[in-house]
Image (cartoon, rainbow, N blue to C red):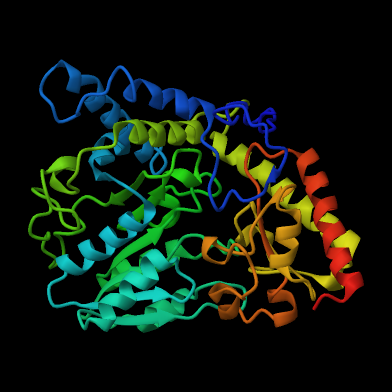
Length: 435
């Protein structure tokens, strides 16, 4: 069968026929490649196979594809033609979100001279948190880690208090947490950073296509990470937005090699000398197409497509929670993250089932429902994730936590069926006093 579609996302079919009857509720782990995205990629895997840096005829179409994709990705961040033309060069294509995050960190610290203090929070993705910890252990930076509250929210005031005048180079806070879906006050933090002359990076990997990532809504952060396989494009391609001039203004100096041979990856000067390595044209084209699918006008024409998708996913998430609470009892079901649903990603339900072992439940239903117990590093369950520990989730709910994440192509029928399957297995554990 095909991934179920509905009127607001007719393009969001799987790229190939899917004969797997398992219901997919792990879109935060990765999304399917949508059919229009695959179609956009195919010419650059076949006919237009040339190197975009080549001056001959075979390089012309690949180069044009990269240019178009850059514009399409930038359209996620700005919606007027003037801003788009002025900002297209701000997009750097990379190989993955981890590379984008690492590059943002290196760019910020390398441009700030003697400022070697960085700030992040304790529920960041390892691509940020582990990178900074390694640098701290090596003695190259000083690191402050701001703690979130029990709902997974960072306080902008706490970030402000952590800034050290004339020492802090970078604040990096994710826009949306990948496990519990908590949305962070990036616009407020951006204002604080701008007043303190501190660069701000936000990892928006989980946010794109679910909430606004428009620069004006985020307070114009200096750097933003965008990841292909979280938005209907393939794995192995991502982007980093770098605000024009941010690395060379207000006492900062653009890092040596950036703009000629690259920084984190040094070599032939691709991506205008900012990231070396021959561009992966098919995947870049796919990322651009995925961005276009999100920003195109919706069927009604009054909003962008991602907004309709988000409304649909929010309905599915609410129904999923309602079904679990009705069948298992509200006292046995606890949502992790913000109590206000609008403060969470619209597609994400991190839910603890009292005295259930999530790993065993997921194993038992793995042929019928694809879900996880948290981020990929905790997907099999059996241990409490670092994020849930930071939120001080009680152990009887933490060990039974499921991360259920829907997509724009998920149907209400699939939600009803998945609810029944999860509830049946949970009740079997309850009846057997598993824990």
